[in-house]
Length: 283
Picture 1 (cartoon, rainbow, N blue to C red):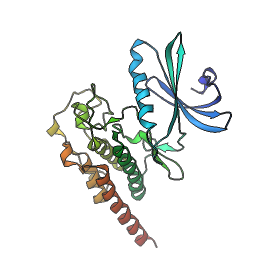
Picture 2: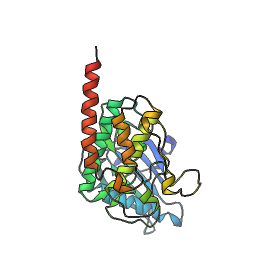
Picture 3: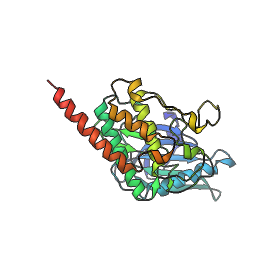
Picture 4: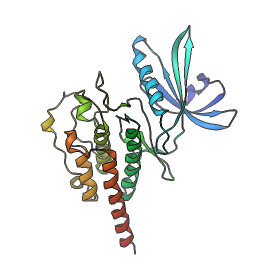
């Protein structure tokens, strides 16, 4: 895709590198010429008349994410509408350039590091919830970890206000909460489920069963979902971390930790315990 760089022109910026793509979008590393600062540019474009929903999602992403100021949440700086014949044909979202790899692309295996990463993610979610929003799409690909350990959560295209009932099912099949599939009101416990499913995948390399299978087998019954404890799939997983993942992916939201703050309390203790044990075991 680097060969497309020459076709993309952004006034005041130099387009340097293609970083990735999504539905009707591409992401690029760019440099602002006047300040020499680097950014990530998300370009959302129209291919046909049915693409308005991608524009709506991108505008929602900017409007929600621009409200946040947290070190573990990607910053959004500007939204530019590109018009042709008085109609918007592209959207350009100027975002913080987050260095590192996603948990999907480079799955961590050290248990202390996993607990530390997910503690930061839980803190970012608690911040979002305190502002009245849910992320609604936490998954390994939306957690970026830099080489020096900085953790960022990204992609707020499906984020919404707490209590919202969405008109259509939105979410990633391996990590989606039951209430997202059943189109019920979303709240902080929805993010807790997505978080738990992501933690489970990170601990085991396997996805949990959800109500929305990828293979198109149809919506499963709520009571048909049994999740194998992570410690049975990976003996290196501490029981406390295994239990937390299972509690977070309870199908009934009333049985999950009731807030990201509850998750933080448990992860704080887990990190402390694992770190202490690691120090004791060092020669």
